[in-house]
Length: 118
Image (cartoon, rainbow, N blue to C red; front, side, top):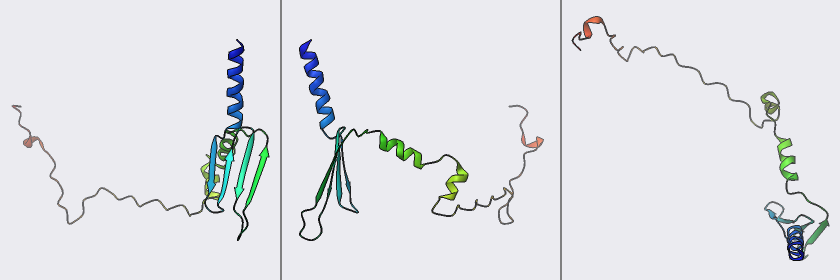
């Protein structure tokens, strides 16, 4: 039983300390490393400066960002139009199925066209 608790403790420690995500922002050239108990962000320096590394310690839920992103979106179409970047497109005109003068109309089938022996 001692071996089981030791294995579970080592697994929990590894899960808390090993990073689960590394993100790089190409615009600001910032690299962020996330783990359950810590987060590190590396920002490049300007000129000959080496840069800056920020380390924060505390519980970081991997599901927190997912919840925050879901709150940004809405299912209400009226509210979605308020924040849209482009104007909504006008509906396309519906063409009627009437034959034009250029196209000959198909002849309609009459009783004479059917063979009664079939």
